[in-house]
Image (cartoon, rainbow, N blue to C red; front, side):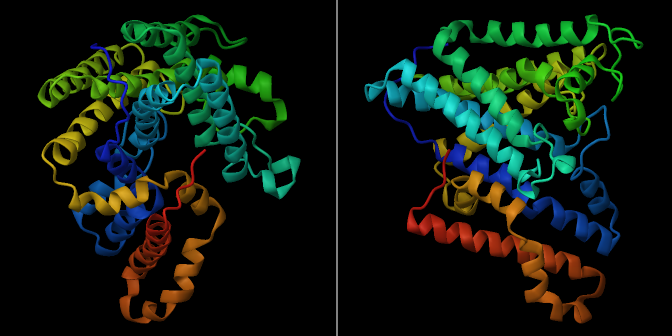
Length: 366
């Protein structure tokens, strides 16, 4: 890894890739699923299957969305640290900024998916949110990026993934044993149940998965450090593509013994999704930043530059209810395709709001 350049870099490809990721969350996936149901076309049915999570072991396209966002967060991390250091900000201040940011993400997660605002302990899930995983992964990666030299980051990622594998496979669960990878038999779920008690909810694993969350973000850090380097764009793309292929190959080979399981965030899941994220980063970087084809991605940039705002928005604002009020008169004419119209209307409402915020220069950041 070459020495990064300290000047401030703005990668338009990163904003577009973030927007691409968010597009599937806020409506892209729903539109494809509705089209598949209405049309009954075979290829759309195949695509529709990719717009939902696998029940346990394996990988669909939709299972890439969360780790891709963590990867993107990681890409931005060394750029942000370099910029703040160049402005005279101390590492201590950067560290506490990371802590505050993680706490805010965790708190917002309790609102979006933890049902905090219901003020009902029976439905409160403090550790059931995408933002919880983002907060944990970001803080782990920020500490390592600040405290460990860049050349040791690949080794650190390997240590984190091996440590998580060892905990999952070697620590026995009372009454079940060690190395059990079923939804209720794995040690990570057992540990969450011990810590959370009555507040445990769902099949996602959390506390023991922190090393794997951190590794997902750190893979993005490696990409960000490479993109900051003084090497030629071609050399950067070659290194990123090679890293992606290596991660996918290693993850698939390891999955023979340690399966790819999103809900447990297994080490193999980190590697396979991280490898795909590297390749997507190369593609977007080549098209947008190297070749200069930027106009087509403007709509993605609009979404990507306010990703936190729209993620919170879809959990708080009833966009689909508003869309139904606006488009319900079309149901009599569109029949089975009305859910498609409703989904597209909801997505259009979201985009109009995001475009207005973009034009006003309003960007919600944590």
